[in-house]
Length: 351
Image (cartoon, rainbow, N blue to C red; front, side):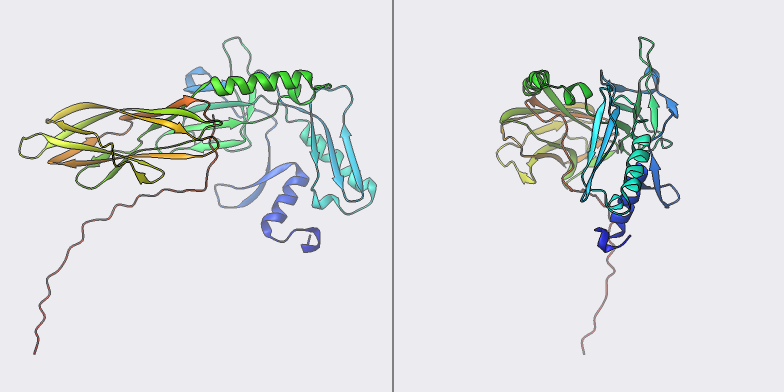
């Protein structure tokens, strides 16, 4: 492999090798770069008692054919009467060289791996399990006795929180309909349902919060819509007030939208010592289509301290016509706790 093959970086080389083997590049727990293929057998069975939420598709995703297009011709494998998906590869650097028999062999070998990816798209939320990795096959026993298997294509893990496994895939029935009539009808129904469906963006705090006179971030939710719509923010906070000197303290709530403070709406609550429940509400009269918004709720306390235990904030942004999934925009948020600085007095003698 060289730059003449269109491979100019090590990442390009790894991607080309993974493509040839029908796998993907990743880094294992020992820090080694490895090429991993999707599992052929399930490594774990997650019953109803092992997961908190599960969304399982009503179709299986499997591939019936593969086509590889090169500069000198196209090569195919599979096909026949199978109603599965067809994968079309238009950019495969390692298939651009060699005799036609060699390129056909590459196509056949890749399809031999591809045809084994018979799985059911699903999304599962569960307690964190560090043993699971992308590429694993997971069985999901159902109440009707079936046990569809998902392939872990996406992986989200929250420190001291929940873990989400996602398996994505296209519906062969929508993709391979011959005249397109059924596909158009179902797409129309799906789009209509999407615009009327209520979507929830949820948040909870995984770490304890201590609120004093400085702004303390309490809630952060990013959301978007597929059409112009409206939305609302709802939250409940379970907190403990510790006033100074026995008097009530004042808790102030500040809203930020896309890092800009909402100046004309700053709720305040006076709290006596002890446990309290604080309910919050903020309306979004206008949410533009295809534009992400980021809501941040920050707390300020005067006259004492407010403490919030882990998982004691339950917040959500909800509305119709909102996107069910918001892609990552590349923003990383970090917080750093600095210990108090000690200043040492120094005497300067001027002569």
